[in-house]
Length: 113
Length: 112
Image (cartoon, rainbow over all chains, first blue to last red; front, side, top):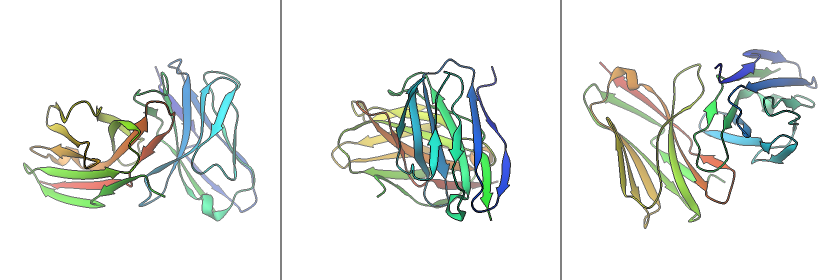
């Protein structure tokens, strides 16, 4: 099992560009989520999904879009990149949302110039 | 608004010493408290977790202490080793909710 796979590992964008961060898991997990990690702020939830076709907003959803068409994939879209979105992005999955350990990918390091 | 506050931000400990990281929360509906460990360039990984029906949970050198009345919980790493050097995050979750709220993180350095 590969676990949670995130691509790309690094990306540099210009302000205003759009892009999609990919996340795939092969553990048949129902729950998937996206976090951003910034120094001194821990991990903040952007969007999450409790199953295919169901998504909801987290703590910091503005400027991001998600969809969940399959159990395996949960892409995160930046609609119009801004410097404030420079961060490390982590995708996570778990068997369910309730008291289950979340399995994280190794992150995408994104810089917006 | 940070619902889970973690301290210290950074911690330096000598090999063999005890590392202590503290977290405090406001939301009394939180009832699941995991700790995650993150090495550079990697995603966080679950280390140990506790529910409020117990005051302490121990797994090897790692112990969580939980004080429900004070709304505080802490991670103790006994006999700290250089390999324990990492960033540690506490977190909290409601049974009825689907969001895991993280603390700010503590960067632990264990000197040989």
